[in-house]
Image 1 (cartoon, rainbow, N blue to C red):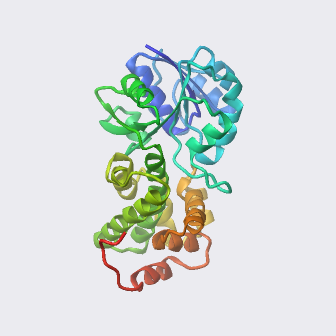
Image 2 (cartoon, helix red, strand yellow):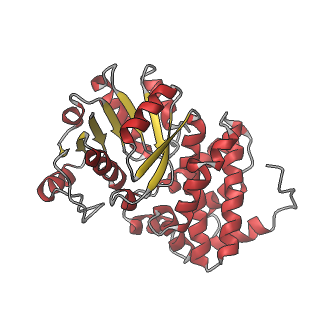
Length: 332
C-alpha cells in the first residue's frame, strides 16, 4: 500500500481520496480553504461538496500541503485548472525524486493557453507526470459506483504504476501514452457540455443534442490533431466517453450552467448559481484563442464563446450554427 497526498478537497479530490483509502492506501487530503478543512475534520466527511459519505480510518484530513506530502509516494493534484499552476509551484520544493505526480484537473490555462502537463514540465522538467481523465462524476465515484477512466504519461511505466495503484473492482483504469489527447479531451468536452445544456435550456430535443455532441467531438479532434494528439484518443474514454457523460448528466456543472443560459439567465449569474467551478467557462475562452492561434475552425466553440461573453444570445448561436455553409461530413 502507498502513501498518497491529495491536494484539493473539492468533490473530485474527495471522491478519489475515498476510492484510494478504501483500497487500503494511506491518504492525506488538504485544501487552501481552512474553514473547509476544519469542517471535514469535525464531521469526517465532505459536507460541502460530497455529503453523506463518511471517511474511513485510512483517510486523514490535514491542514497544509507540507503535511499532506510528507512521506508521500504519489501526489494527486485536484485543484481547478486555473489554479493548478499556483498549487504545483507551492508543492515543487516538496516533490522528491521518487514521487509521482497525478493531475486530474481538466482545462487549459487562460493567458498562456497551456495544458496542465505543459505547466508541470515547464516548472519542473524532471517531474514524473501522469494525467487521469475520463467519464467520472465525483458523485458516483465517491459512492463506489462502477467507473472507468484512463491514465496517460509519456513514460508508460508510470502510467502502468498508477493503473496498478488506483484500480479497484469498481474503478477500472486503462493506460494511454497520448498525454496531449487525453488532456485536451477532458478540457474541450466541457465546452460542448455547455452547448448541450444551452440546447436543453432552450427546449430543443434529443436530435439537436446528438448533433451537437457529434459535431463537437469532430471539433475536439480537429484541434487535438493540430496540436499533435492521436485522433484515436478522441474515440476513447477521455474523448467521446467523457463527452457523453458530461453532456447528458445533471451531475455536470457545465451542463447545468448551460441549461440556465439557455433559459435566459446571464452567464455570469448562471456560474454563481452552480456554486462550484464551471471549468467550461474558462476553457471556452482559452480554446477559442488557441484555435485562432493555430488556425483551426471550431464553429461550436466560437458560438459558445460569443454567447458566454453576451455578444449573442443562445437562440442566435443556434441560428448561426444551423445556417453555416454546406459541408461534407467526412472532412474534419
